[in-house]
Every structure is written in structure tokens, then in C-alpha cells.
Image 1 (cartoon, rainbow, N blue to C red):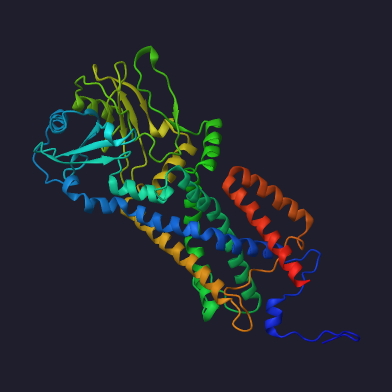
Image 2 (image 1 turned 135 degrees about the vertical axis):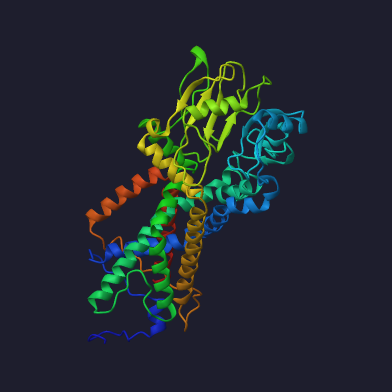
Length: 482
């Protein structure tokens, strides 16, 4: 209704959609929620593609251990026999098949139906890969050979690289760091919006479902499923974001510095013998730490069975990996490798001459609580900690995240004007939420944003870029309206 003397006329619905009313200044009780909604929207639109790629590649990598048992069955699985050959004879069979390579280590068969892996340094594979020769432990027959990267066969190695850096090398890791840095922000923002919507429904006397989608049609149905599935997988999203950050380039370096400062790193095995023995700490945020070894070994004979027996006396059990000494004066390193439901990674250093344990890492006593949690988190992120169940959970969560992202974009499409508009997608939440927020709240938000941006540099840089772009777009729109 026009006021006296006013020349304005009521605007049509299309006009109101294209020219929203100006935002009034002053604090508003809903301004904080509006700020969260706008941040959730822009982060979802601009960062979701990176999270979507990480989810799809992560789902593939999660099931890689199971796929490997099928793809490489001919070299991984053998018919159990009555008595396995000594490890030294198995190693000799592998060496005879590759006489020009130096033996680097071994993974003895852990179960009756498993083959033995004999590891060789192969200069043709590069500095961080080894050639694994698979031997039937009962017949001493060589089954085949494959290049491995920290124990991963080619299929897992390729899927791991696809998930971490899209096979683009070090620059490609920025995509996964951006996804991990923003995932928890988007997830918690969505939780806040979901909880607020449920409270509003209860105040209106409507039935507010917590863990099942409310009935609806069109955009309302899409929103209900988007929110409900997001809440279902929220704990795992926060877990994957936190553990994924530890692998990142910039935020991961910060994590390493913090852990080094508080001595929360993974304890490293001391392999030097005599007076030269010194202790160091490994980088526990590396999911493959302790599973590799030197790639140039001595040719001195080693009683491999005696080494395994000595390590067993120090609490190191199969499955395990031996790393032969790179030069005289060093011990053989023996460390437990990943096995479903195994929570330890005990390790021992064995003198190859006397077969005496010279150093050991006892998981229960030598790992700090933080180092244990980090180790378990990393192995669970990789799908190793709980075997097939772990892989299945990761795969389901990844598929659920894909559906949440797709429904988010669908909602954006469903919000588009259908009449008298050239907009192809829905309008973003109204700007001006920051101006309507109490100055004290704004100050707190700025402080938290700076702190988070310091810890997660890519999140901080991208957030600043969003703000600059948003301000620029707002200024352009204001000039056009004028």
C-alpha cells in the first residue's frame, strides 16, 4: 500500500525477485543464522566440486584392499601346504629370479594361504618404490613380481595418487587440502541450519523428525533428504576432515610442528648398533611411516628365520616386514604391518650377527596417547584398521556425501525463478548479515577466522577470496540498481 504523496506502486512477484528490498542496518536476532546460511551456501557452491572429487576417489581407494585380493589373486594366494620352507630359502628363490637386484627386505606369509613377498631395490622404479617378488612359501616357486610403494600394489598406488593429488603430483595435493579444510566447515554449518529448522518446526506445532527426512515435495523434499543424510554421516565427515588435513601440504606442516613441540610424534626405531645408536622420532601423520625401507642393501647373509624369532621375543608378531641393513653397523628392522583389528605397530631392531634385539618400540608404552589416536585415525581413514567393515563404512559415507552434494546443487536449481527472469539458478541468501550482527559477535568471528586461517592456510586464503568476490559483486549490483 502506498503512503500519501508516494508515487510507488506495488511490485509484481518477478520484480521483487529481481530487485530485493534493501537490507536495514542494526543488529538482528537472526543475523548469526543468516551469516551461517550464506557461508554454507557459498562454500557449498564453490568448494563442493573439490569435496565431490575427494569423495568419489576416496570411495574407490576405500575398497582397494579388497579389489587387490581379486586382481592379484594369482600372486597373493597359494594353496596351503604341510610345512613352509625356511625364509632364507624363499628369499634365495626370489633372488635367483632377479640376480641383478639387491634384496631390501621381506614380508613373510602371515596366513597359511598367503604368499611371501621378497622386496628388492630396483633403480628403474625410482627412489620410493621397490620390486616385490611373490614366492610360494611351500614350493619355493616364484609366482610373479609387481612394483610396490610402501607395500601398496599398483592398483592401490594408483588409486591413492588419484585421491591425494589427482595424479598431478605435488601441485595436485592442493585440491585435497582445500576439500579437507572446508569439509568440516560446511558440515557444521549444515548441522546448525538443520537444527534451527527442526526447532522452528516444533515451535509451529509441526512434527519435527530428527534422523528421518520429513515428508514434502519439490525443493522441500530435496532439502529434507540433503539435511538428513548430512546428519547421518556428520561424525565421519568430521573424522575424515581432521585426519585428511594431516596429509596436506600446508596445514599438515603445521600439524607436524605442533606434534613435534609437544612430543606427540610416532617413535622411530633405532637401527644403529653400538655407540652410534641414536634415537629419533618419526612423522606419525604419514600414513605409510615405518612401512618402507632403505633401497640399497648389503649382500651379507642374514638368518631371516632367526631375525623373525628374535623380533617375536620383543612382541613383534606377523604380519610384519623386515628391512635389511643398508650398511655394516646397522640392525635389521622388523615392524608390524597393518592387519584388521590390530591396534599396535610394535617394532624391533635385531643384530644380524648375534640375533640379539638391540632396540624396540613397544606400542603400549612408547606411544603417547595422541600418537596412538593419530595412528589409529590414519589407519581407519585408509580402511586398514577394521578390515572389510572399515572399507564398507568409508564407501557408504563417501556415497552418502556424493548424494548430499548433488542434492545441494539440485536445491540451487530448484530455487531458480520460473517467470520473468533470466536467472538459471536460485538467488543466494540475502547479503548484509554481517552488518546486522552485533559488533561483539563480529569481532569474535573475525578472531576465530584468523586463527583458523593460520592453522588451515588454504581455507583462510579461499575465505578471503570469497569475501573479496562477494563485496565486488555486491558493489556492481548496487551500481546497477542505482
